Image (cartoon, rainbow, N blue to C red; front, side, top):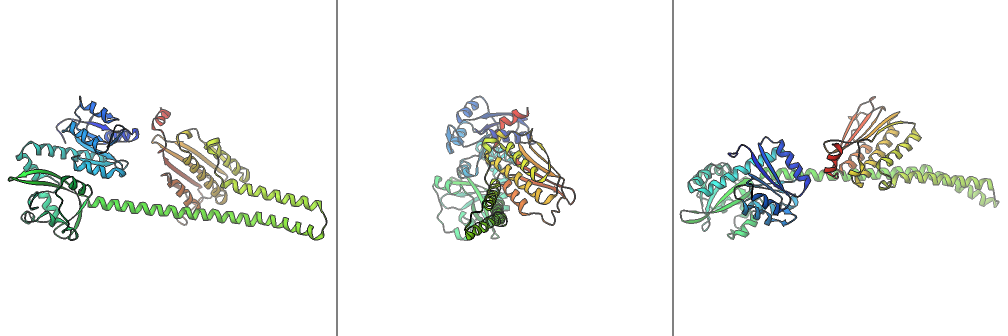
Length: 486
């Protein structure tokens, strides 16, 4: 790794949450971590570099006082010995790749790495930086590093495009012998459809071209996607370029698979949402047809009778009034479940207790609630409404299907920054193998997924039903969470 006993790290990141996660992953890794410095602005980082010499710098390119590639260039000009790893979001990937073309050792996408990937990136970056420094030190060391580098590398003449030299890793990657390799031009590594494209000599244009993975063809015809970095060197009195290859074929395939899975997941959520909406509409239609419609038809028949006999019958008019009043009550009962509660006025807990009170009054079910470890000011109004709807849905399922006499409901904020909703009944239970995804459960899963929630179900015939929904505290204030548990 490096000759020091431990690694000193500088993190240039203005987002508190991302810095916290990175710091935790560093501590979870097997690396020996020394001092960890943190800078929120570019100016702060330069001030630290005046007195400290970190081994690794994690750099967010977009800072309060600096934007884009300028952040990297300023840091890189300040210190040449540190390995610089860009930390970026997916939306910043183009500018990140541009920074790599200017010499950054590696990059990590925020939210898509853990301690293992972080450690691998640090080790790789330190080795790459070490190779770079040794390459600059002397021609002899450069050649030794070139031939033994684990990354495929080759050198070509800028004027003739002829490949002059390659290392063993390139021979293994492209399947040519070394003699065959040095008889090729760089255009021979292109797939057939790209062979006649013009060769770019301008450095800035070339950097733009290689900012994204490019296709290369191996001797056996296999197409691989590669990331390219290059260095200008002089070889045998001629101007040449040294090319270093990073095969990212599998990474791209994995990314495409993840994107496909995400699209399928979104399609499933959309489908389940539509099914849930249609089910709610069907239930509303049945309520209107079987209940309110019949009541109003009765009132209409009485009115027709009064009109036909042309005689005022006050007893029948009073009865018609009662029928219409009953219809109004039924409509209120139906619409009350459809209109979102004013959670911002009375709060989530009060709203949930209101639902419980209504269910208790019509079913006789006994409820035990636990909300002491829940701080609703830490979550968004959207998540509150989602939790309310899940409670509403599950209690509706319990009343309709469970034959339960007792229900436990709790909301708990865990120390791992998650929020857990638990609803457990002592009813007849359910065989998930027979019907794993009923409309009610699918509706709950769909609602939970909209806030990255995970649904767990524990049930079997005769043993009640336990629903556990866990939400990451994405909307929570991290410092407030820490204070709450101290």
